[in-house]
Length: 402
Image (cartoon, rainbow, N blue to C red):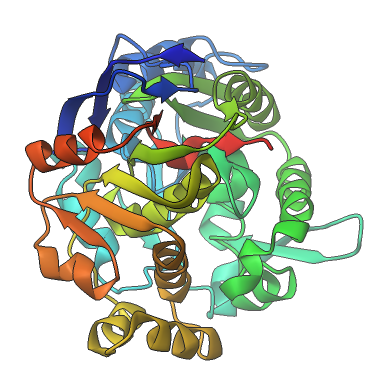
């Protein structure tokens, strides 16, 4: 561990530099010196276990682009991929963007509205897991489970997943084919295999879920993948190529740079988070859960987070409840699309005091049992009051080994 008297945390628009004489930063502050666009361009020219992407497509190919929409740097990754696809001579190729079901009905369009115009021109297929006519059988697992995927994706000439890799509570390691499965499968298969509702967070099944995703990836044959590895602030690396090779290289990078073991507990944990807006609250919950093991009982967590105005049925229940814990009882009994996000926030707020520096008004956080920080000066005062401090930038990426 190294001392870090100067602390830089960033999350989209919010960002700050803080000071604590004894601050500890257990994660190597690895971040690339070039943009995600340049990182991706270079990786596409140096594919892992594959020729460069330009040599993997031929004129007339229909290319399915399957993105992980959580990735804040996704527009830059897609722009680099599109540059290559547009360079194909002759009749060129036909890219199509295949998106998972939109739980809020408008989230994906809102997200895409902020993308460059060139990306908004890509034709979009919106997957509906409840419409069995939109999926086709692709293979059966070794255990005999029949796997279905979106027909447009399954029948494409070239299949490219684009997103990020990080340690997470669902797969152990998010990334690679997890953008396609379970997101592009049918509701019956997703539920049967434990990828829906609260089941997807059961830690005892985490390894099984990751192995299943990897097995499905191998059953689909040779697929191309582009995966960004987050750094402390921004991107650290991008790997492209054969999906299994990218998964191995990315996991090795995460194991090297994003695994840490708490040695003692601090009074205060300073965090930042990074995610595309529709996923920002979910990623915040993940980061807070990971940070709890780093602080003493009754300690505090302060987060720098770029958060949108929350919405959804679970948030409405919390907002209308007199006591957040009364709302938690309702949410456990009646699973809702944003229910797990709210439950994770409520659970952490009952164990420790959570402060958030964000552009949202204070009442949003008060309704969730969180504390609002008005500005960087107020956050610095909180730091000054703490005898010990641990710094966890981009905390949702982290894996804490005990």
